[in-house]
Image 1: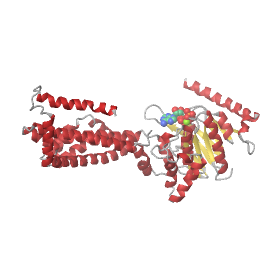
Image 2 (image 1 turned 90 degrees about the horizontal axis):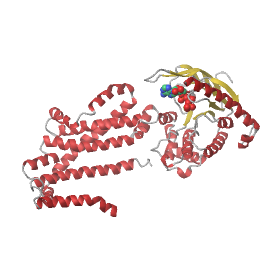
Image 3 (image 1 turned 30 degrees about the horizontal axis):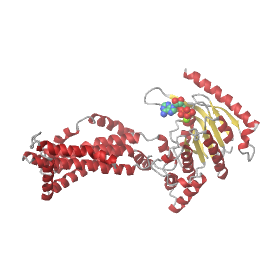
Image 4 (image 1 turned 90 degrees about the vertical axis):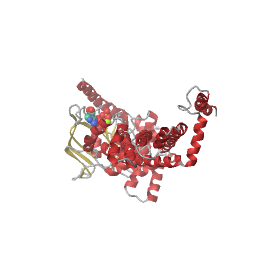
Amino acid sequence: MGMGGSGIIFDEVCHTYRPRRGRPVLALDKISLDVRDREFLALLGPSGCGKSTLLYLLGGFMPIESGSITTHGKPVTGPGPDRGIVFQSFALFPWKTVRQNVLYGLEKQGMPRAEREQRTKELLELVHLSAFADSYPSQLSGGMKQRVAIARTLAVDPGILLMDEPFGALDAQTRALMHEELLAIMQRSPKTVVFVTHDVREAVYLADRVAVMSARPGRIKEIVSTEKPAGAGSEFLQTPEFAEKVEHLWGLVRDEAIRAQDAAH
Amino acid sequence: MKAAALRYLPLVLLAIVWELAPRLHLVDASALPPLTAVARSWFSLLVDGDILFNGVSSLLNLLYGLIGAIVVGIALGVLMAWYPTFDVFATPLVRISYPMPKSALIPVMILWFGLGAGSKIASVFMGCLLPVILSTYNGARGIEQTMIWSARALGASRWQVLREIVLPGAMPEILAGVRNALALSFILLVAAELLVGQRGMGYLISFLGDGGVYDGMFAAVLTVSAFGFFADRCYLLFMRWMLQWRE
Ligand SMILES: Nc1ncnc2c1ncn2[C@@H]1O[C@H](COP(=O)(O)OP(=O)(O)OP(=O)(O)O)[C@@H](O)[C@H]1O
Ligand SMILES: [Mg+2]
C-alpha cells in the first residue's frame, strides 16, 4: 500500500455508545484495518461485535470520537456520495416509485434531466427491474427491493460500496441469484466493497479477504485471504479450497460466538 | 347494490321515526319537529340566503384556523423531532397542554381577540394545533434511521433530508392527525359561534333556537352535521390519494 493510502484506512478507531438510559457500551476498541483499493472485503463476527458500527462510522453517519478513518487519503467527516450504502432493511423511500428512488441521488448530484433519466433506465436494466419502474416498493418482493436499493446506490457511482447484511433478509435461492448479480456488477465496474455478513459461505464466495471480528468490544481478530483463481464462477463453491476456507473461518467465528455468549451470562 | 341499500337502511328508518314520532304525538313537536317541517324550513332558509351567508362565514373562519394550524403544527412538529434542543423545550409544553379540553380556550380567545372573527379563528387554530404537532412529531420520530442515512449518502443536505425524506415519511401520521383536527375544528368553530358574533352557522342555530323557530334550528343543525360528514368523506378520499403508495 502506498503512502497517503489508496483505499480505506482505519487507524485505532474506538466507538462508545452512550444511551440516554443505562451505561455506556464500548462497541469498537482500537480497530485498525486497511482495505485496498477495489478490494472486496467481508466482515464476519458474532452478533453485537460492532460490524454495523464500523460500517456506520465509515459511512460518516456517526462522529468518530477517537482514532481516524481515511478514504483515499481524505479523513471521513460526514456522509458523502463517494461512499454508497446498502442496508439489510432496504431503506427505500416508500412514497417514491422504483424509478424515483433511483433518480433521487442523481437529482442531488445535479445531473441534467435527460441524462439522469437515461442512467436510471440503464440501472434498472442492470438489476432486471425495467418492468417495475413505476411500481412502489410496497409492491415488490424482498429480492426486488434489495435490487432497487443496489441500483439506487450504484446510480451515483460511489467508489466505495458499504453493505450491511444486504442479503440477510432474503431466502436462499434469491440470495444465490443476488450473489451472481453482485459479482457481475462488480466485474463491470469494480469498486472497493466492505460487506458485513453472518454467512461464512457468502463471505468466502464473494470476498477477496475476510476480516473476522472478536466478540464485543470489537477488534479485528484475523484476516483471511480468500482470493479466487481468476474467472472462477459458482463452480468454485464445489472445490476443496472453498470448503477448507469455510471450515477455517467457521472455527474462528464459532470461538468468538461462544465467547460472546459467555460474556453475556 | 344490496350492501349499499343495507348501509342506508338505518338512516331511512331514523327518518321515518323522526317524521312519525311528533305526528303521532309520541314526542312534543316543539322538542322534535317532524322531518318534513324541518325540510320545509331548510328550503326557506336556503332561499332567504341565511344558510349561504352564515355557511360561507363559518367555512372561511374554519379554513383560516385549520390551515393555519396545519402549517404551523407541521413546522413545529418537524422541528421538535429534528432538533433536540427544540424538543427539550417544547415537548413538556405539548405534553401538559394535550389533555386540556380545547373548548376551554374559547373564552380566553374571546378575551384576547374580541367578539369578531379573530377569536373564532384563534379558537380553531389553537385547538387544532396540538393534534397536528403531535402526529407530525410522532411520524417524524418514527422514520427509520437507515432511510435518512441513505438519503445523506446519496448527497442530500440536512435541510433536503428534512423536506424530502422526513416530511413525506411522516405523511401517514400527519394526515391522520389532520383528520382529527378537521373534526375538532367543526366542534370548536360552532361552539365559538354559539358564544359570540352575529354570523356563522353556530350563530344561526342559537338565533333560531332563542326565537323559538325549532324546525329552522334543526335544519341548521342538520346542515352543519352534513357539512362535517361531507368534509370528512372528501378528506378521506384526499388521504387515500396521498397514500396510494401504501399497499
Ligand atoms: N444505539 C445504540 N445504543 C447503545 N448501544 C448500541 C447501539 N447500537 C449498538 N449498540 C451496541 O453496540 C454493539 C455493537 O452493535 P452493532 O450493531 O455494531 O453490532 P453488529 O456486529 O452489527 O451486530 P449484528 O450482527 O447483530 O447486526 C452491540 O453490543 C450493541 O448492543
Ligand atoms: Mg449489524
